[in-house]
Length: 211
Image 1 (cartoon, rainbow, N blue to C red):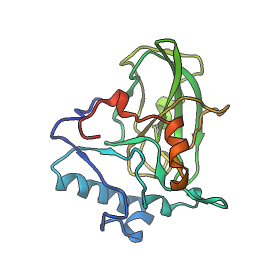
Image 2: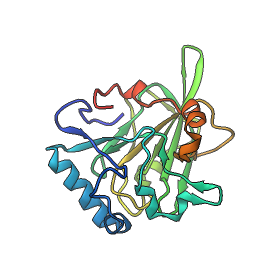
Image 3: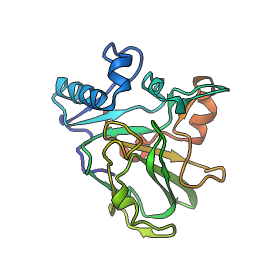
Image 4: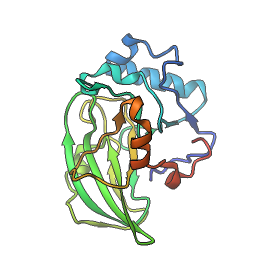
């Protein structure tokens, strides 16, 4: 998916839960400060890439009103994040068709987003890629065929990536529920069971021993 040795010493698991004392409101509110914090977390583990997040109950979404709705605050992450530099290529993990695109341009949102459609052993499912670079994203078209391993996007810089430290949000979905270019990537913790059933563990494809 990204040309990073996901199981090698250059990759490390990053913790964005309340158990991490570095995640203060001051460190999260300002994106350059948040980016510096991510680099600090990587350096502490002698890593160049960070991984993690599936079904992690995170505090980092408190930085954006996008995750606080009338029905409750969303904090349960439904994908895996790959924290790598902006410009890192993103490749299709399997043969795919571009299903839909959207620039979810809100503070804390996905920014440029791609959803791919896959068929494997007679089963159709989808993968979502959020926080992409706008230039490469703008060249894609729905219905476009992609080969396994074909580069189709890059990790985007802030603020165009939804104003996050550069990373890729990767998520699997069994049913898009009619959505185009967007799908919830964060859910309420009390809805964990139903969202986990809709969004399987991305490590089924990543196969990283860190996850």
